[in-house]
Length: 476
Image (cartoon, rainbow, N blue to C red; front, top):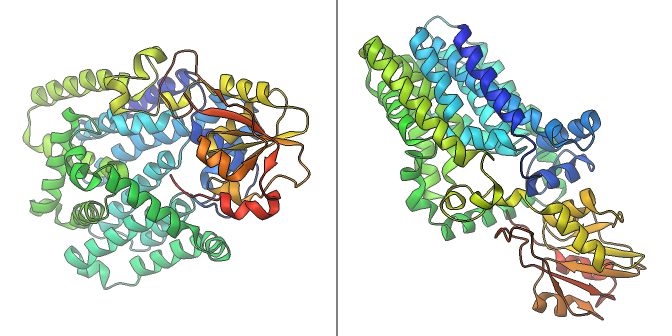
């Protein structure tokens, strides 16, 4: 790859690391740290890869937010390199390679997920890696044993997020439609078996725990229906990378679908079309296809290189850089928290405000507790914040997602501080409760915890071991 490509990837890494300490931990990061302290082959809401990365970060860097976010920054830089490498595999020259790299660098969805430790961060990386290997395997005369490598990468990806199964299905469908010569060989199917074998420990965990992934899938579908994802899914594809990049990936998609020179690689485009239809029907979240865009941006770079002059390409590169820099203000924690916690930026990216106020929240919980008390939190972010920031080392429990599986407090706990539940819930499950204290963060940022009630109670209405089943809830 060209030096310019490495420079773009290095620039992304430097920017993400420089901004890693802004605002604070995201609620999901607090949860992944908790999951990492309870390492297992699976969890209610994800496989083990991201919690294992959180555990590694804690072992290497302690409680450093910079250390935790180094890994997603590296993953995002990897996406830039994979986009450029895919362009090369498609037959691109240096101009197309640079365009692909810049598309990976300035795609807002990649910058946003590259800033925080999240399953989506590594999911994008694994999708891009699988598609890159598939593109190399689809080249005329390629060694078809490369499909075993694609399967191995997909298998590790499945240990991070189950969505990689959709990518595998989409690519295999694309082979059946457009590359039956490859589909008739055993190698893609053996690659799928390799992926399944690597994924199998997580599947065993799911079976042993009554397949909670099905409950989570229903919850995500219900959330998607509420958010009208079926309606907004396709329009969102034109803007969530950033609007200036939309013509590039659309050109790449059309080139793969229609140009005779791209026929060998057509399964990638067919996978995008098929999965877009699936996610529209199932009300999937707009970012579910993000991992396919490095390849489409690469294909778009090839199209531009073959049809535009050097001057036209340079002007387009300037537009990508200019608009991408502006959109980075939305994707990354650049502005003061008060400027992004509410208003138009928060409407586009609400993740910034979910990274604010956790130490103050934990102090408010500390103030409500008495010696020997436990904390029962409404969600995994609240429980994780108490575990991370409580100066009194309060033990935190929750009925939310995998916290429920880690079990209830001891029946002889002195008392309980209930946080994040409304008055009706508290009255139904707890007794001897005092008046609630309402938590407000310093900037009055309207995140999920601003305005929650903190209530100290004597205990649950029944012993914890009996009441625990009634306190479980799964949701995203």
